Length: 135
Image (cartoon, rainbow, N blue to C red):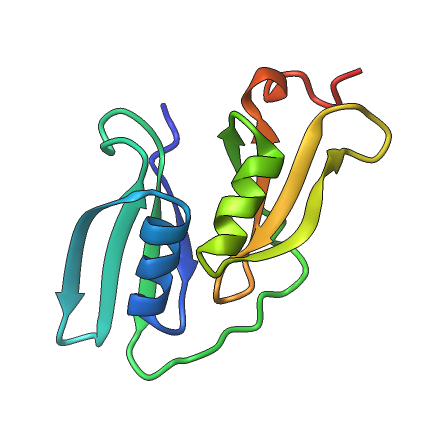
């Protein structure tokens, strides 16, 4: 088995595609619409689905906002330089919600950004990504 994708419900497909492709640098891999059941799908990622996990963005026509609940945590992305990535995201109009710095109780450098629907995305420095708290 392998992880294929994570699905996020979004309130505006174009706004979300702009964030994931322009701000985070992912590629739009494929799109589809279901006229009968009134929803649109877009798959985005850094590699093809055959090579790695991707994100499925689902827009249910006419639904502009979702209650995220308290069970969802975040999606994590490995980056070479967390502080520089935060600055690029900010310059592109993205929202940084936690600046680059060590994780609480450890030394791994992380930051958090938020997508247009409020989903949290953690940035972790690649050199520390597999080290947990980096102690």
